Length: 382
Image: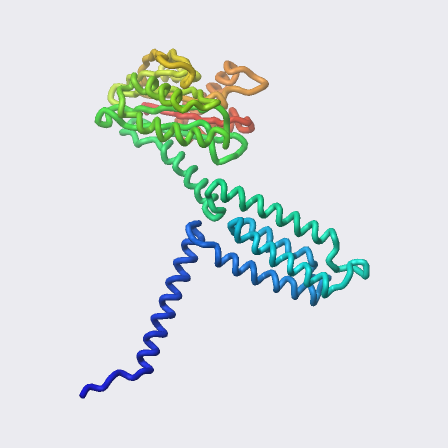
């Protein structure tokens, strides 16, 4: 007759399994919480435990741990808890204030006691935390994910603005500087190699507004424009973009845009403009800059708009610059003066080459301008 396994082994195995299940559940709860998908009970328990600790420290040494210290877990709760859980934390803080008041005695008998000012400070902190929690609940984005989401949006805009590599003999670069040193901009670029890689299509767009105000619309438009680019014939892009903007029905629904269609074999190009500033071409043979601008209205103004191209050719040594108005327009000068300043600064790079010049040109021409600035530079090497 076979012997059964000792009961101690069964108990030990069950204990190990229970511990393992508890560890997995705790880890999943922690991961879900920090992702913003799980319950907030971990933070609620932690903050609940800090309230009696603060209360006991206040009673023991009220000079070093003032009764107003209860505002700390209340404000922290506003950042991490849901409004329903936050009310429970407030009830615990109110109870702790009552206990501290009873233990320390009337505030008229000396310092380091619960005064009416203490109650007002804690109540103000509670109101502030509740407003934060209600705002997060209304937006639907936990505080732990808010910064991550904004970072992700910024990186998506940058990824969509990345320029494709060009064949040997060509150089391209793009610099973008949002208004006020922010991370979001109303200027963006979408670009793609089409026609079997023979053609470069690039679109520089300036959305109405600036900085954070225009960043969300720029993200939406950059995704839509990136989908349209290459999916339509070059002359059909701006009409399609114009129709898309009209369908959005935004209060500030207009944008300027310039569309470059460049043949990388011959250097021939077309520029189609939607109310955008002219491009600038440096002719290596003469050393002169020429303005190149198509004819067309702003995007999102009226339906049925027509956009007429202007043609040109980039020969070896030539440079083409596309830019937004923040680079050349300011309150103390008009656009013509800004363009003259830009070409004057760009002349310094004619001899040494334009590699790395885009960012330096923005710094030299519009460093402290409170507007979004973007510069797309394409050169054909000699």
